[in-house]
Image 1 (cartoon, rainbow, N blue to C red):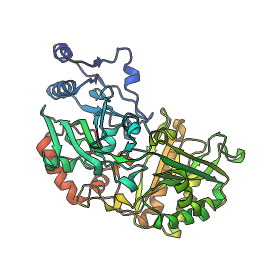
Image 2: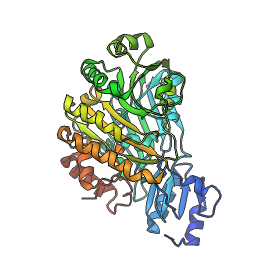
Image 3: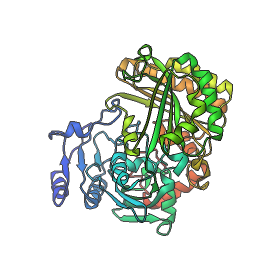
Image 4: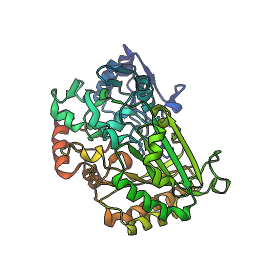
Length: 459
């Protein structure tokens, strides 16, 4: 797709623009348009790499005036590739990655393009943290506005539960602030409503005391999985909030702690992330440690180090989805284990069961997050490098969801899925919440300028 760019208008944008404007012929353009999901290959007409809020404001005004499709890029992790547009304008926030920490107030203010690594590395010296994603390269903005589920959610709640304030550039070129006291209806919408209401240029979070975490990664041959998973399921019913993590099938990596017979083979793994020291973690996880695992990595570390320990490799083809389960009985457990045989191996793909509960379930019930009360999440997280595996990878995801649908709530965390249709979007928010969000969307973006997201149509 070729978009004609008016030179006079482009020169007007360049004047006073602190960041960098990249056109398709510019050095660095191809690198700047790469996303985490290598399936997405789009060529925007302009990439506006913003340095500050004024740059964002200028880019939004320019895109609206020239009627360009606008994509907003933070971390670029979203599997659907909504951070990129074909022939339109990308507002790239990655140069806006500063983090300011107030250790006395226990707050952090994060610029719109920061990743989890920027946030975690800034809070770690103060022994403070807030719920982040499960890898360091995820963008804080998109993660939080979609709800924000991570390793610490059972202890500290979702990322959006810890959101204290936000600054947005809206479709009409206004800079709007939102908090419980200022534009509270918009603030409510930012707890799960995604990037529908403007470009988030600043987010302020509540922080919690956290000196260290302990990671326990235990490995078994896949034949042991049903037996081990039953114990894990029952363990989580009474586990303290400090316990996060998940049970998953992976391709075992060639690491020193991995037995040779499991390397590059389908392997069942259990990851316990404990918000506390190793001695406590071992005591709490004793029922799991007694199951006779074949490989282990157990280590106490700063939370910021844990966050980058399992970083997903970029450049793979991606396809993800999820089902939120109201229960996980033996029949569902058996189907979950059986379907792991469809996963592409070897690959970085993960066939995951995440626990919820704890502070996630106790969080505010009136937010547009329909999925927070489900005790379990099944998350087929597919990554592979050969396009010939695309159909196989998709079918693995679809079959797993189909198998577990009898126990599914129908709700879904929209950050975990790609394009799955309007009804899945409504299911992510809840129907009444969606209608309320649509009214707020009509107030702040009546023309749906920001539609490259899990989109809410203006009422």
